[in-house]
Length: 123
Image (cartoon, rainbow, N blue to C red):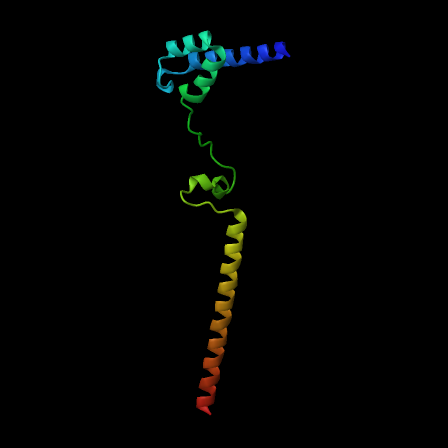
């Protein structure tokens, strides 16, 4: 058990050190790179956790394009103030289709009524 924990700690420390060294100075926050290296070497667990939590600047996701319909890449966090699910959007579309269908039927009936009134007036 201790061997597994030791190996995990070693991997985390080596990963943190490699990440610190390969980062550019602009991607390191709060302290210079040398101080971060010393912190990770002297306090391996705490230093590594601090590095990954507050020391490094995480890149913004890179847009690698989409496959097919561009709407597939839309996420709710891309649309400020919009936290709608697909089910809600489908329900809204169904209501809109029903509304327009009823409106078309009303327009058809009104045209028919208008024609009958004109026929009645002609007689």
